[in-house]
Amino acid sequence: MTDLAEPAPQAAVKQHAAQDEDFSTLPDVDAGVFTAPLKRPPHIGEDWLEPQQTQYTSEDDAIWDDLFARQMGVLPGRACSAMLAGLEKLDLGKGGVPDFGRLSEELGGMTGWSVVPVPMLIPDHVFFWHLANRRFPAGNFIRTRETFDYIQEPDVFHDVFGHVPLLTDPTFADYMQEYGRAGWKAMRYNRLKALGSLYWYTVEFGLMLEAGEPRIYGAGILSGPTEAIFALEGESPNRIMLNVDRVMRTDYVIDDLQPTYFVIESFEDLYRQTVERDFDRLYKNLGASFTYANSAVIDVDNVLHRGSQEYFLRGGRGSSAKPV
Ligand SMILES: [Fe+2]
Image (cartoon, rainbow, N blue to C red; front, side, top):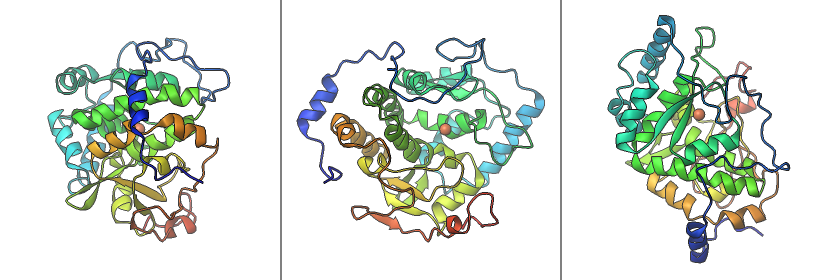
């Protein structure tokens, strides 16, 4: 028995709206809630914010410029129009690593968001708290020439080039804040994995229809050249219309291309699906582990492309398999 296709009952929507969490202070984390064991550097406080953004060298700035140029050779016609418009609005190609103060001032006038520097990946509850208050924590460091093509830890290029342009879009900006607020409930139910899946398959690896064709809005795809082509044009991966419940039950890989991409109609649709969902009911019905493998296609899926999974069957990253 599954509640996968059931619409959110109206009463639940009201209950969600009426719930008065205090999002202004850091949420408590119960002892039973698993969060990644991250060691906080000694100069960093509980908010995990750096006192100021790194002073970048001319080589750091040159790496930003080269990464920017590479992506701009791939993204026009593939990235969603809101992302490309955001790059222009924030003038992210003006040269060198952008100054977070300037970005925050400009974003503040558009959607009320700011960009704040953090040293590395930060704990979930701190991340939720910043998002719920319209602050986007961005990695302070930039990758080196040696890690130019692939870096697992999010650096300033991934965070600012990949994530920040979409914060100029009012609906996506609201979705990101709602995502942060949803963290409080996920922690109460100890279902951070499920909420993490939603982030992964939307904010990091999401596709969106534009004029009937999938385009990229996920930062994990936008910030690298291989996946931008693979996600849209590859035969291997599935491309499936997004259903929030289904996605939150689906496993994901963090160190390779994705076997499945989920596609939204629009940011309005994503926002509506998320805020109207009765997460209490979902979490009560959800097991601690994922129901669906990351390559699975299930009965209720609206499938745009059923992938061959060839790249993964041949061994994926680290093998000689081509990302086709
Ligand atoms: Fe990211």
